[in-house]
Image (cartoon, rainbow, N blue to C red; front, top):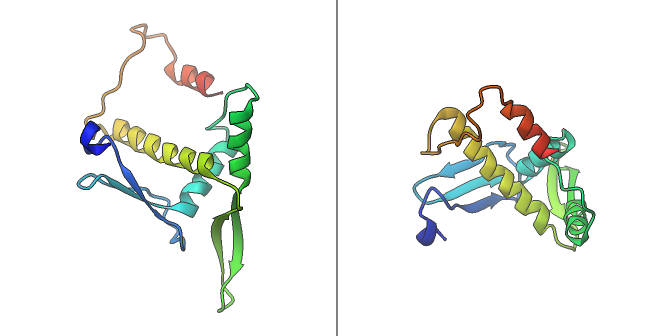
Length: 147
């Protein structure tokens, strides 16, 4: 995909899933087109976004939405006691798939990267104005779109 679309537009993901190091930041390497994430932390971040209403789903109840919800139910986060008595969180999944859940986490990582670049004015990302009417309330329109 990088040959087709170019580096900086397509990224592979390196997932640290064995043990979490508590890193909430997705580390983008622009040189090799790889983003490194802590699986547990990014899943927790996505779950918090869902719980806070920042991420939603469409309203039509269909088999794809049901599968998406089932895949989130297959994500297991638990506290595990180490040999030294300390506790740490781990992430795993049930025997069934969690592909839709993990792909939505990757989508969130990508969207956050785009939003950060827009805020910082970096990465060659440009925004488009939907209307030239200065009374338009884009922030509320976006919230209506997400809900």
